[in-house]
Image (cartoon, rainbow over all chains, first blue to last red; front, side, top):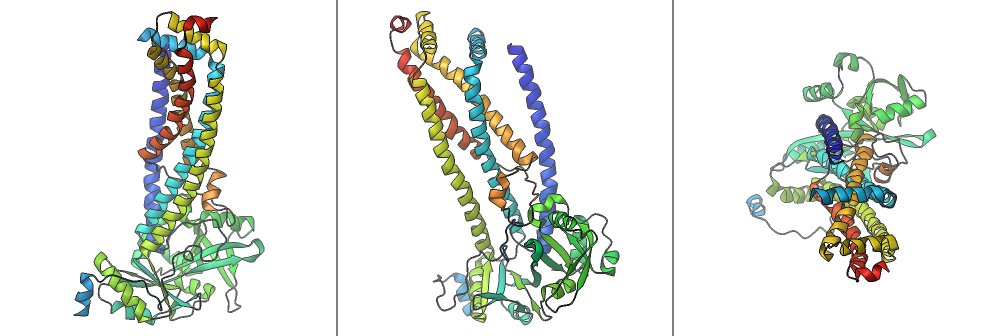
Length: 83
Length: 390
């Protein structure tokens, strides 16, 4: 029984290893293609299946309130620019 | 040692019906939980890979809560800010197909730019730029292709721009389905066509992007941009990153909290079941004790018996989830993460999970499971064996 168990586990493990290595190779190519596409379009995010207009851009935090800008600490670079 | 292992296997086979029900239920629960973690992790990986190529700042003309087209003059203006590089105007927008209430995203690219040509050639095999630019052509995402085929637009699609003209654009090719997660709803065409279809006048852009390679300068650049115009919205790269991170952490977290409830109920059921330990189980423990086994030996033996069942369920569940998410591409469950109200998403997920994900599943399931079983068994094993046998 132990021998049977050992061999069945071995065969299963080898099959799994083969599947995983195949999928890993495929996902590398895919990541490369996605990277090229986003470099071209410069559009962030995913093609979500939603009906929102401008769904790729409308969610982001609105930084446009110039009357009450966020308090910001001075940094060294502020003095560089001030000169 | 081998004798004990053999005895363990014989016991497992003898009581296979009892173990099978627990095995199936546990496998399904682990598979469901792992699937959610795998989908969430895979989507996050794709999002962050798309964000790597994003501009550091996106600037929009923003008036009275509406996004308007940004003037081209801003590009020269932004170049005067120290530390700013690669200022570009983008042309993109959504096209609404009213009869089916579906949206496409149109992206205009400058096909006379050598870098664009080079990258397009890697994306679309065998693209001939002269042929592409000879007439109004477009390259579409595979979900758009499926949709247009369904509505019998096999070779071309007719857009109706705001100036009431008719723009017939031919389908040149489709993007590979492996990039569907970003290109499913995308239509790529020449920038001049996109301008006309989206109604973006000459001298304006949908928005303007710019790079600020020096991290230390970004806050100052942000301030300078902010004070340069008051009708402006500035979106920084990390705003986008934070948004997506929060979105998928929220969705994944929601599921995890639901699973904790399910696991607790499952543990409770198991505890109940083993609290009312059957006479067969009790006699089995008593027999082992009578044949000279110590309490800790009996407990370790019982832990091993159940551990084999739950470990098999754990690995089967993980394997099932892996197959479901990365080979079948998570039908039904992916809609919760990607939405389902627009074009059908034929996304392919790429394997992405960390060891900590697997450890999390193991700890949240296997440990409570073993505890729920072992406490009632311990109660029986400390009783006098002869009393239990009677």
